[in-house]
Structures are given as structure tokens and as C-alpha cells.
Image (cartoon, rainbow, N blue to C red; front, top):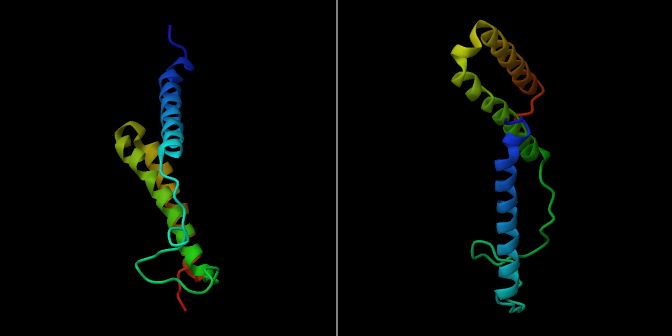
Length: 121
């Protein structure tokens, strides 16, 4: 007889093997890999352009705000896929729940537009 907990055993085994593989490969690359250090090798390099000045310059908070909003709305849109796959099974109740979800999503979207979160000045 299969219990609900025993159905997770293959997932746990796969996670243990994946973590073991990653740890083994990181350890082997540390042990076997070259260990040459020099001033030129340790220097920052980006796009073939010599770096100058301090890398700790202030960024506008707008970049971070747009990134966070993108992640937020992107994750919410991901919830549409399971609903679309199970549309017939969920029936009218599922349709009402998804309309409520989309309504809340649109309220949040209009709120950030009203607050000017996406305006670049």
C-alpha cells in the first residue's frame, strides 16, 4: 500500500543525487583545477574596456523597482497556465476564481501605474 509520504521518495532520492553530483563536481574542480594567480589574472575585465574608478556608484531605485514588478507580475501570469490546462475540470467555479484573480491582478497593475512606478523621468 502506498502512503502519501512514500510518493515523495523518488523526488528525495533525485534531489540527494543532484546535490551529491554538484558537491562532487565542485570539490573535484577545486582539487584538480589550476591554481595560478597573478595581478593581471585577478584584475576586473569587462567587454575589453579597461576599468577605472569605483564600481560602487549609486543606481536609480527605478531599475530595482521595475525588476521587482516584472518578477511579481511574471510569477502571477505563471498561475494562468495550470488554470488553462484544467479549464474543463474546474468548471464555472474555476472561471469565477480566475476572474477574481485577474481582477486583483489588474487592480494591482492600475495601482502601480497610478503611483507612477513605471514612469521614467
